[in-house]
Length: 356
Image (tube, rainbow, N blue to C red):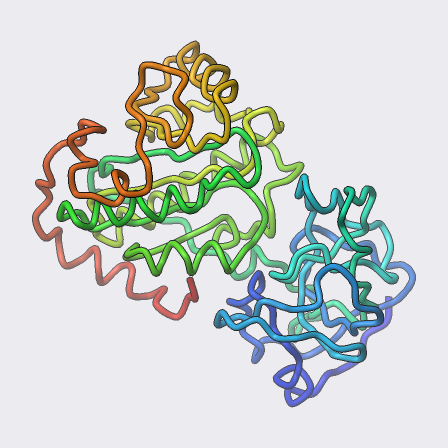
């Protein structure tokens, strides 16, 4: 392994992507590189764009999408990726040319490219970012700290879907509007998927007081991680939402329930203990029947579906979801939480420098 120093000016002139947005550039003093480096998921590194492809823009730390050009230096991190209509990719076992597999700044090596998808944008790693002790910096180093909440868990709704592109994030956003219109202060936790600033900002714009995702727990994506790690993500994000003084929580579960990481939620004690009710975002009647049966078998409380008319459950369109009457349809208790202890806000204020 080779080590070289790096000037702060070079780091600040690079484009910093969404996923490693909470990296403190001041802590970076050296670059690690060489043929003997084996990357890990979450390792943050400086790279140069060598060829443009599917993703020709980069989601920056503060939300804007920046057009990429060959020669641009970008700060991204390694992560496994499964986007059914684009790429399946995994962290490579070498520190050589790789692919930008998500505009949020996820780098991997593409194993499979799906039809109607362009070849990936390729990037050349320059060096892993390291601190003054020459320790490589990982996304886990930027994660929210472990907290213990002394406050009761607010009413919590899970939003899940049968597959990609079923409108799950839109369902989440509309549900947030409805809960907010009914007087709730809403926090959101996205617990599976791949880092995406677009989804986070859409949810924040809908009225979420605090929006957290698995990147706040140190994971660039949840593809190929263990059920125990997903449980830890749920606990971390929900605890921080409780401490942030919200009185309703929406948990968004990405991807379909037949994917390993999301299917494990069916058997997760943490998930079933946390969630009070489930809303399905569905694209077809068969998905409604199969997935409500799956949840019913495991005694998870499905209370409504969005779009598909195939069960006896209430059907909620966007108008119904965003209305204050959604609390009556979902049988959510009246908002009854008064201002919680000031110590909660004081505890959470230590993390105000985190970007959503």
